[in-house]
Image 1 (cartoon, one colour):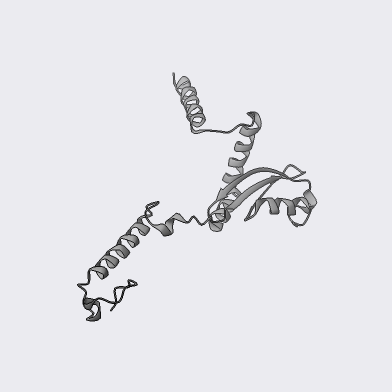
Image 2 (cartoon, helix red, strand yellow):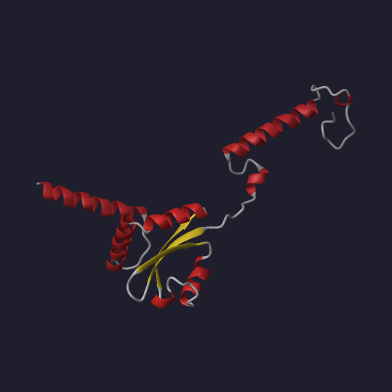
Length: 164
């Protein structure tokens, strides 16, 4: 068994001995690389440095002409929205024009489909109604974590006032 280097096999490798120093180094490095790959340590494994961009899947909500909401999911949101607006989707062709009201990005198609099913339930529709009403009352801006904390502190303040 040869240790794999470009040099001719050493005497220990010819005999198939496991005591070859080159074979030991190679075995240890492959174990370390496998361990680092399973631990997903960024930058330590050359194979992990190449980033493979996985596609995003989207769950979206459209507001139709009649005021109803349409919930769907798609791989390419822009293309799907263009299909809706062109009248190529049977569910919304008679309710044109449609307006994109809300969307969420998911890492897998399964999660996007599950979120779509969840938004189509009564609780999901109530969530969308609250979410879209809140957005229509406040001016459009980017939300941050600090904004969420301010909103939560206001809620606690209002609750404590009622308790007095």
